[in-house]
Length: 294
Image (cartoon, rainbow, N blue to C red; front, top):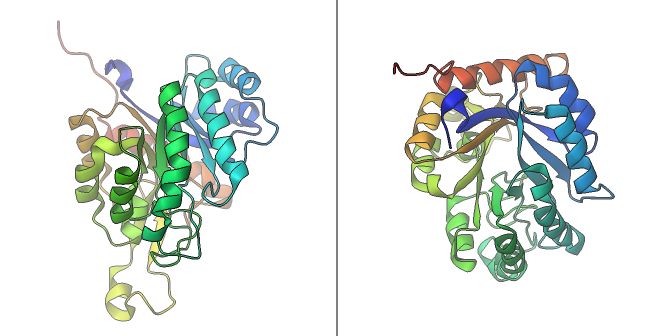
């Protein structure tokens, strides 16, 4: 993919699939270059082909749709699992080939004991994706769960990723990666990205701040939050390093900002924070594209 005007690595944001045309019309002028369109649990009565046409009429050639995201529990909710397949078959209407979401979880057993059910459900979903030329990218949020009692999503640990990729071989399954979820688990995000970068199919622009003084004083079992989700530019991650690793390893995709989590840049400051993050990430990407002399 051409690097002219940074076409190889676009910076965008998330938007709900329902009502997307109107929302995109409002935020597009801020300079977002891509959008992940998301849905919670189910596709519902949304017609993907018709919605895609309306979305493309709005964004024209100013931005792209990077992916669709469906965030439910496909390991226990058959409707969510079936909607995964519908979204996989319909993502092409948006000019995209990535579907993101939670891996799901059987919440009454540890992550490793979820693997037979994961293989059953995503073995079938992966076959649909392979037939459509679509990649699956798993969001890494723990949703408040743990290894022994996962909640909604088993894909919250590198150890789990290795098990999942072993259960469903091939390169269809990958990650919707972000440093935030690694930092919440006290995993070094830069080392983690270096190891798994070939499995990264989509990147969420979300960061974190770790209060190291509070960790030293209270540890992690005090009931006091010691890590905050942050919008990029306000957290601890050096996104120059993230983008360097992505580009060196041939990643051609998007970083879509996942807002609505920052404890400071929220409410009336939500879009202020997102646009700051947009410009910050563009600067980390290298600033304005400059052609070489002929």
